[in-house]
Length: 227
Image (cartoon, rainbow, N blue to C red):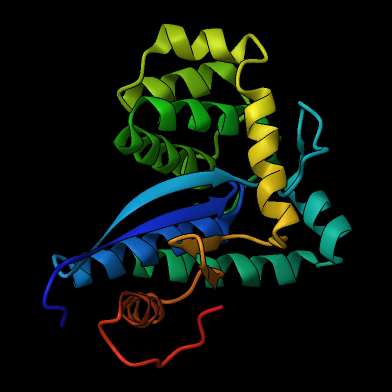
């Protein structure tokens, strides 16, 4: 245990369409809850698009995954069940039937960029609302009405949210952030960057995050590999 509390800066690079990002966020938050008050964190979400070329109308989810990974319906059903169980273990509910379609998420990332500028806590609330809308409720995270509603629920100004969505505001800034992380070598998500120098990749279990964060904070001897 630390003599003095340690506060970490965490950049959570992810896409709202990524189910493992929902699992990873749940695990990270559970780990931080277990480590408080000795270790706390300022959490910020950074953009990554799994499907940047996805058209506005989206694509059938089975077709998309089949084209991308060659997976069969049975394999996709098995993967859904495995991730549903992992989500349940950290308090996140996935739809049993999975998503019907995969959508473009760039506008969601623009809103998240704006939310961070407004209030970091509201960015966290918006990110969680987007993950729930996509993976629990089966909503379209590229639909502007959906996005304005979620921004409002997160405590953000709905009129300002719609102004942003109906313009190209924050597009250049969001693209620049995306390039920053891809050029740094991040090509899969979630990627959790601690204090700009330590990387934890993937939707790890709670105990893995706990050990890694303790190691990074100097509260425990090295016990896990932290890049």
